Structure formats: C-alpha cells, structure tokens
Image (cartoon, rainbow over all chains, first blue to last red; front, top):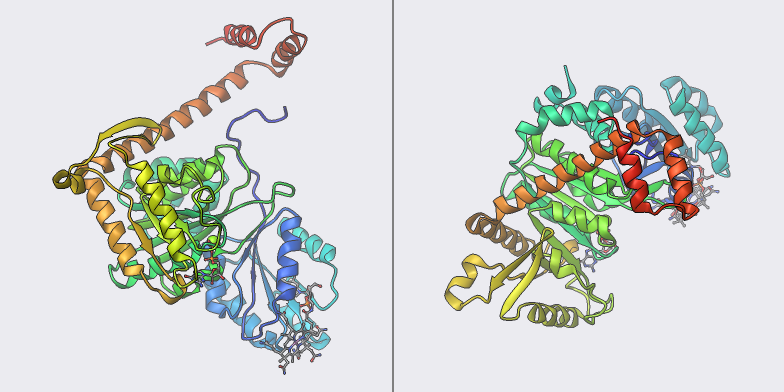
Length: 140
Length: 335
Ligand code: B12
Ligand SMILES: Nc1nc2c(ncn2[C@@H]2O[C@H](COP(=O)(O)OP(=O)(O)O)[C@@H](O)[C@H]2O)c(=O)[nH]1
Ligand SMILES: [Mg+2]
C-alpha cells in the first residue's frame, strides 16, 4: 500500500490536442501519433479532420491542453501554422507547445522553428522520438 | 484575481484552467469550489449514457444545437471516455462529433478521461459540473460510456438521464442491460434510420411493461421508494413513465421531440417535488463522500505506517481478526 489517501491529488497528466487543420484527408499519421501518445500515458483529445485554426485554438482552450499537435500532409503548413500560433497567443495560451507532423519540406523547418514551433516530424519519424520530445517540451 | 472571480466574470481561459485543477483535485481547485458553491444549483443536468457507438456524442451535439438555437440556453458538455487501464493514457474522441458547436461562445465542451480511480470519477465529474453551474451554464450535458458502477454514479448526478440504445446491438431483453431502467428517465433509440428499430423498440417496451406492475418498488438514488400503481387520472402528474424516443442524430430527426420529452421530465420533477429530492440526495451523497474521505485521511495521519503494517501482519498471521485490528488502530488514535 503506497498511497492510502482516498482521494489523492492526481498528478497532472499531459494533455495533448491532435488536430488536422486544412482540407487534406490523410489521417493515418494523426491517429498513429494519438495512439502512441496515449500509450505513453498522455490524454489525447482527437478532433478529427478539416479543422480550421479557429476551431483548433478554441478546442485547445476548452481542453486546457499542454500541447497542440498538427498533422498536415497537404502542403499548407506555412499558412496554417502561424495562424494557429497567433490564435493560441491571443487566447492567452502562451505556454502551449506546438508540434507539427506530416509532409514538411526541409527548407521550411528553420522558419517554423523561428515561429515558435517546438518540433517537426516527417514520414517515418519514430513514435519514441515524438513521445520523448513532447515530454521534454512540457517538462521544460 | 482568483480563479473563482475570473470564472464568475466569464473568463473562459480561467474556466478551462480551473476545470483542470478541479479534475486533479488540486488545492486551488478545492478553494475555488468552496467560493463557487453559493453560485451553484441553477443548471439542469442531463446525463447521456449507453454503449459505445450508439451515437451518444452525435446526439449530444444535436441536443446542444437545439438548446442554443431554439431555447437560447448556454450549454456545457462534459464528455467522459475511458482511460487505458495499462498506461493510464486515453484518446478522447467525442469532439469529432461535436464540430457543429465550435465558434459559439455560449458552448463549452470539456473531454475527460475516467483515470480508473474508484469512486474518484463520480466525484471529479460532480465537481466539474459545479464549476460549469457556477459559471452560468443553463444546461450541462454529461456523456459517459454506459458500463460499470462509476458510470452509473455519473448518470445519477443528473436530473434527467437519457439511456441511448441503437438497433443491431443485439435486440433481445438480455442484451439490453439489466438495470438501465433504474437510471433511465428517457430511453432513446438512436440510429432509427437503421434496420431493426422495431425489434429494439419491442424489447424496450416489454422491459418497461415488466417494470410497471401494480406496485412499483424502485431504488431512487440509493433509497428504496414505493409508488402505488397509477390510476388513469393521477398518473401523468405524479408518476413518470419512461418514454421511448426515436432519433436519427446524423439527420437531426426526432431531436425536437426528445427535447420536448426532456422538458416534460423537468416539469414532472418540479411538480412532483422530485427535483428537490434529487438535489438533496445528490448533495447528501457528496457530503458523505467528503466525510468518508476526511475521516480516512485523518485516520492515516494519526496512525503511523508502522502501526498499520504491524496490525496488518497480525491479521495475515491470523493472530487477530480484521475487526479487532480496526478496534486496536482506532483506539490508538489521539482524538
Ligand atoms: C496513404 C496516402 C494516401 C491515402 C490516405 C489514407 C488516410 N486515410 O490517411 C489516400 C489514398 C486517401 C491519399 C489520397 C491523396 N493523397 Co496521399 N498519400 C498517402 C501516402 C502514400 C502515405 C501517407 C500515410 O498514411 N503515411 C503513414 C503515416 C503513419 O505517416 P505520416 O502521416 O507521414 O505520419 C508520420 C509523420 O509524418 C509524423 N506525423 C504525422 N502527423 C503528425 C502529427 C504530430 C502532432 C506529430 C508530432 C507527428 C506527426 O508522425 C507519423 C509517424 O511517423 C503519402 C506519401 C508518403 N510517403 O507520405 C501520400 C501523400 C501524402 N498524398 C499526396 C497526395 C497529393 C494525395 C492526393 C491529393 C492525391 C490525389 N491527387 O487525389 C489525395 C488527397 C486526399 C485528401 N482528401 O486529402 C501527396 C502530398 C503532396 C504534398 N503535400 O506536397 C503525398 C506526399 C504523395 C506524394 N509524394 O505526392 N493519400
Ligand atoms: N446511421 C446512423 N448513424 C449514426 C447516428 N448517430 C450516430 N451515428 C454514427 O455512429 C457512429 C458513432 O457515433 P458517436 O456519436 O461517436 O457514438 P458514441 O460512441 O455513442 O458517442 C458515428 O459513425 C456516427 O456518425 C444515426 O442516427 N444514424
Ligand atoms: Mg462518444
């Protein structure tokens, strides 16, 4: 018997919003990542396809998440990402870490980092790496 | 500004943060709950439960749309999904079906994982509902997967509980879980566009017939109540007979009728005095849970781990009985 208090303060679980902004229907990657993060003990709110940046920021606020993960395979990441970041900031959610996955050309990586994106993962990225980076970003 | 002040002022970020504190049973959350308590007791709590895939989230989406558009009420939704018993993580996917509600500042959706705690789920849910109530939401809908005692407890939180069935999930009486009539105020057959609705309806009807003999004895929020068989003229006023409503959530069919049925249930609760009974019972259950928690915590503060382990060891060795052990440990208490 380690903790005998009946209703102990729950240690805060990492809460992650996984969303697919824009119009592309590639949702395998988003689902793979959602499941991997769940298996790492996180609470993942999955919002499904065709989310606008406004919908994503609103859901991030209501769910009080620590991390927003965007899965974009349409090529529209340079338009969608800054908009999501802007809205999160406008809502006062400056502490939220934003991760991006999907088809992201190397030449965009630098600019995404400069915008404040915490991590970018492309095809074949290992879920262990994703989990580790998310945990590190939230802890740090 | 404190959390509770900000929440009362309508600050949505503060509301979201406070819900986290309350869910985690953190000190800030407990302080805010005390401050917010005088502002609670106004909302209508609607529980929605049923097997996975019956269309609960889709139905909640439609009901919330109705309350927004037709009745102009502020709607909060607490959507509960199970945590993995192995890793404690969860994928919470109810929002997928609620996209129609986004962009409306008078709707607030919060997903919640069961976190596998015994009894803790019902307590955490009740506390989150109190925060929404104080924040001025008129309608609070709680969606839970209908399985297990804690979900039954969550359903009992509500003034009005909908149990959602769907055709094709095994339509005989056995398949429809025994006990649902204890918690259902309204039975919903969703997916009424699908083949087999008649069978589901027949099964539910025969269950209802069995449940309404001349004298009905039922468990009402834990206490046994008896009602005399209704006579034609008095029945509709004093006794609530669970109606069956058919809906097609994805085509928003039957939603107005369902909302009207919910409205009739509210009138019934008010007229029969049952609303007050339910409120009282809910607060009593909560009070008792808090007393139990406080007493246990006090016990563990007073009795050292060593004393406890020694007593346990004696019980294991069959030197003393558990009853004697309790007596010994409690006598050792200072207060
Ligand atoms: C399978 C597939 C499809 C399937 C999608 C099925 C589905 N439900 O997902 C189908 C056949 C429907 C499809 C259709 C199309 N596709 Co397609 N598709 C692919 C393909 C071959 C594999 C994608 C995949 O599922 N990979 C497996 C998953 C697990 O990997 P992943 O998504 O990359 O995810 C990993 C990482 O990116 C990262 N990640 C992903 N999301 C996230 C999120 C977070 C938070 C994090 C941290 C990490 C992360 O982690 C994951 C694990 O490693 C890719 C090519 C490729 N090799 O990527 C093309 C590809 C994505 N498709 C492409 C195109 C053009 C199309 C179509 C427009 C084709 C057409 N003309 O009709 C249509 C569009 C459909 C639509 N509605 O959007 C192009 C996109 C080009 C671009 N962006 O510049 C690609 C790159 C092919 C190509 N080389 O041209 N496609
Ligand atoms: N045919 C039909 N499908 C529905 C209806 N309501 C919901 N669904 C579908 O049933 C599936 C499960 O719905 P969801 O609301 O997530 O169910 P939940 O698990 O009970 O919350 C989804 O694919 C919905 O689109 C309905 O009235 N008719
Ligand atoms: Mg659901």
